[in-house]
Length: 328
Ligand code: F6P
Image (cartoon, rainbow, N blue to C red; front, side, top):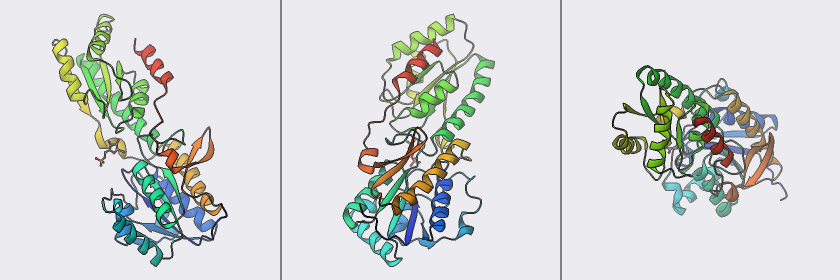
């Protein structure tokens, strides 16, 4: 497509925050300045677009944000943006600031919003994959996923200390909505006894057998990682089912929850966010609209948003095989 002349770009973060969003905003804004573009922050995602929470950014706004978790632009999930009236209001606010294009950082819901907005109003947008869940196609890793895995692993290491002291069995629930990426990574990285993910059903009897074998092998502690969103229930539910089979076990449950969303981004996420922030603005300048910028094999790739949000990225079978070998 012949690139439009772009003079003003709005940047927003939307949906669940993820470590590295600030680094991505900074990179997009600095790239805009590099190409003499005026950059605007749209606060609180699409909700802020509807309520005109839009401010011109200068270099002070993006000083010392790269290393901080969260998003200084704030984030929200907007019900109103799902309505045509809400999107119309948002469009009028963008026009009143003369914003010609958008960089949207978020997960599948946020990118769907950008796609709709492009279809309805022709506002060019490049999406960046900002979610700890890693559930977007068109990128090997989403911004925040690596940090979330590191955070989960560090927490599980601590649980391991106390689990070993007391010969206990722990069920640790990790985030990921309906995807098991954090669970499989954190599970392999923390020597879990078993990993339960939504994509692969493990009957409770199989899990119990596995734990029995480990007990015979005199493993002093057992940690089972449970991805939230599994059909067999969360960590608490599975723990109570297992307790019926193994009543002699001292079982504890820990839900890691939102601590996985916070904290300073890892070096990997800082680099990923920085590269993609540059790619977002350069993509817009080169006429790449309605796409998500991702990194595949270390190279920037632009994938149509419609394709990126289709739920076809699945946990690698080989990761599952590795986890099985290492926990036997
Ligand atoms: O999408 C990121 C995520 O942290 C999921 O892993 C989790 O299911 C969800 O968001 C939690 O959302 P909220 O912060 O709105 O409770």
